[in-house]
Image 1 (spheres, one colour):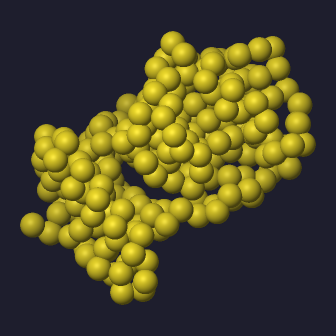
Image 2 (cartoon, one colour):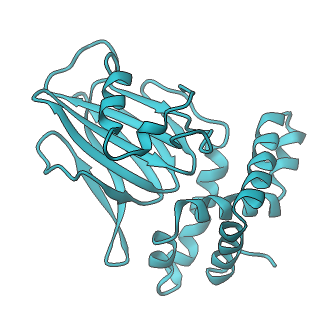
Length: 238
């Protein structure tokens, strides 16, 4: 996972130029996926080219979730779909698939997805979020430490979505930072850091506590809204 300051990746007027440089020899790259407070946020960048380069993973299709009339729907992006300069993507899974059906996957809390044709042979897709974008294994990458915990939290979100009227829209329209704060609150409430420490995973425990303190101090309204969301959909024990 690449890291560094890339503020231009969060700007609609210049993200594609920066992404093209970062993807010059790659089919995809993840920038600051577990460091969402970095300048520019977390970014997943994908290059859809007219022919495989055979130098890296060569994606041909991108899938992500969005909210349509209050319901989650899968969106497909390839080189033939109309360009959407900027749109929201919803929480959940992002997938890229190559010509052989091989796949790489991530989970995210939502954000902005941008598409740009930078030359006749290359279409770029950029996912930008103020919350983490985490690797969920695949053909050419590993699994991030927090992926299992976030995946379990997303699984718990599906209970009210399946049984409570309006819960899917309420969650889907939430700011990505609110959902992220809700995850951190849930993790602390369920004593995930303590469980991680017991199995020797100090990095996960430190990460959750650090991010919880950061968000609580930097964005108290976001933290409060996350608590309200959890109460409304029945995920809070308090």
